Length: 588
Image 1 (tube, rainbow, N blue to C red):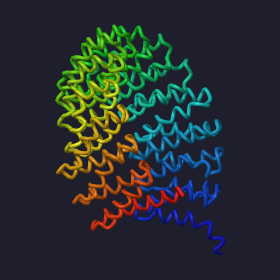
Image 2: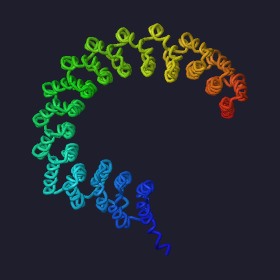
Image 3: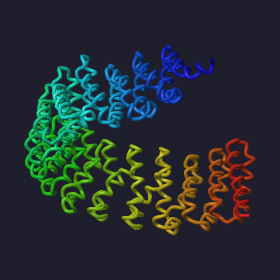
Image 4: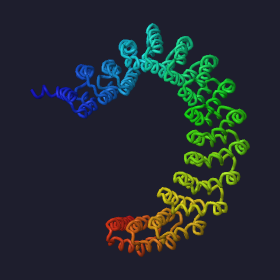
């Protein structure tokens, strides 16, 4: 009897767990659906599990979401593509629930399944499902239907295709704004599956209706459709049907619609071509750059470089640059920040002379901005300008401002400058670097913020690599060694950190003669943190120095530290000693 009952166990357990009051138990059970399906086998999954899931009336959204996700990969468990239609009923019911995330996941799973179904099953099962949802009384069903048309349309008969196009047209005019929003959002996907003959005749009619919708939430989704449809239409049709819509949207009474246009405009330029861009879209873009709403100006400012790439330099200088100058002193710090993040990219587009004449003053203005994010965005892209105008001009015009920012009160700005210093050093050369930036590099080693001190130590290593060990011995090493005697233990620790980073660059000779005596002396420090950092540092020096130095100096120092009262010091000292022993065994 037990042998007969055993196959019933998984489905019985699932039913029990799905009726349990504990939501976590129900959720775990749903997430194990694939395991349960394997246990049941393909036939029993089709006959018992799928019908049970179709009737499942769980009201918890998290459980339903997990079910929608699991069913999307269920085709192998029901017997392959020929039985894929069996999975549609439970997903259809999930497409009608109120929770948006559940519906979206159900639609996503239906699209995955529908795209794998045979054409006959698509016509017999998937298309009727879409038609039922599109005609549903509850708005949720109609919203879900909008996301399925592009899958259902492919492989249909001409009669069914006509029905589907007509049904989608009705959804575009639905009484509920939520349905019209879904129709606007999915119009581009649906349009890609249609024959070109129907694009102008039917899709563009639907599109025109959506662009004139009284709800701004529908119109702003129609903006997204502009770029998608523009790429599908012939150039002359695009100019006739899409261009007027874009121009009108750029003056829409709702700032959200104008915001969406500002985000998408450069894509639309590619669709309508250079002539229409020059005559119609440049004025529209200028209007958006000068919009009353800061959010619209932020979106437009963030796309200024991409837009200018589509224009010739003369047009950019004539129309866009005056707006850029205004935005650099905009009342909104977020507008200035958006501009600062992209404006450096305009230098290669405009060329050397125009960059020097028009952009450099704007860069300087933004480098001195009161808002730290603006300064940060400019600093992080300085190399783009350097490639265009050369280091001489950069050092004359922007370097004084950079030196000033090296002592900025916001630590992230100081950090950005530090990370830029090695690049500056390589381009400025030793002489200029020593005059202007050398002192700052040591000053950062004693900064109040740990991230700055750590970056400064890394910076010293990169400078030693750039200018060589001889330069480092003159300009960096003496000052780092002096720091080991600093009264503040954090600064002493930073000196040890700098030594550990610089030792591989400086080589064995300098490490043994200059660094090692100082490190051994630091092992007598009264602060345990210093002592266990010495142990870690000595371990890192083992591969750099000769074995005789390890045996004579490093091992003895570590043995002393291994007897320290502090447990952490003993731990790191013993770890380093084990490392010495392992290295000795490896050599022998």
